[in-house]
View 1 (spheres, chains in turn red, yellow):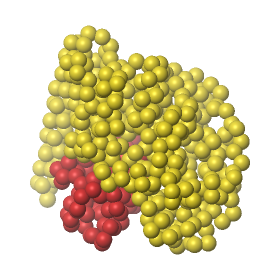
View 2 (tube, rainbow over the protein chains, first blue to last red):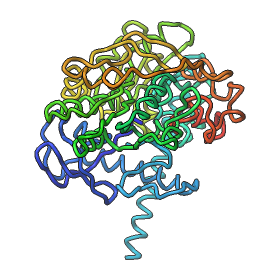
View 3 (cartoon, helix red, strand yellow):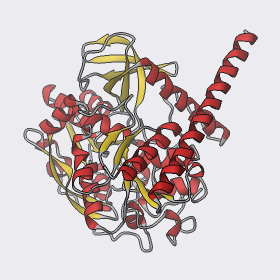
Length: 97
Length: 376
């Protein structure tokens, strides 16, 4: 429920941004960001809002962990691709991230 | 290309090997600390993502038998009360209303039915990824009344506050919320204050603390002398968090500290905190299976009160349903019972046919225990 995923900013438009994670893109709000962000920065995204900047190393480490979980779920026979069509790792019956 | 793939694979293997070596080192250090303490230690995690991660990474197998892990009220979906689900269904059944919510709320049992049943019955209930999706739906459909059924702890409530601020700025008159947000610190205060369960240390929620920082949790150390560590979700994060708690017990110096420094700052996210203060005021809230906890939820402040769906569009008829008979969710949420201690567990109550809310959400304690086969 409270899972947040580090995502890379690839486009900026006022208080909105486009982020990329797992090869897919998503439009998110920067309204709650306590600091300025730029292109290429990683932000922690939860349910359509960036909530904090994270450094690249921490972001990539979190992605590795999520990928491991995704593979594990595939091995467990998860019914659909753990990278859903929005590119977010969503276990089968988990709420939106 | 094949070379490169081989190299990548071997790099990944060596990374895994080093994770394993580090995990074993932490596991040994935990055993040493537990021996120094010389008695069993009860640790509680209060985040559903931790509940699942403990199983997924096989953490229990790396801990000495003297460390007992309890799951607390860590899933906002599970603690949503029957009357709140009933109110959501009653709102969704109103003509011209669309009720939007997160996917996991759909299967939470009300008195008899859930939101999927209401939808099958003709109510317009939609799953959204973000409260912003609900706001956009309201803007695109001025003739409809769009309600966001808002659940979640401090990670999620600021997003709903921000969405309400936008609705206000953009004068979107047909956007409402049915908020059942919960606050983590008052629940922990109630739990520790009750003295019903002995908790030696708390594994605090990584992402909720991204918003709150550690200040709202300081009372855990100051008033309850309970070591508390904000912990990440990887296997090494969790083991390190547990070791930090044990070291505090050994030293006899309880404090609130952060293991998850990559993501959590002591001050949290001031902008999100400001959004919460602007839109919400603390209010008593009903936690399923636990009861009403003072100031553990949110009510809307002016000028947002007009967007409280039940007040604005109601009254709604909410029948008085009792908690399901035999369901031990309340005791499970308080750490008094393990899911496997419940008579209904795995028999009358399964993820396919949940009786209690802890079996509904994938991050509920009962669902996690069921999926991973009891206490591993």
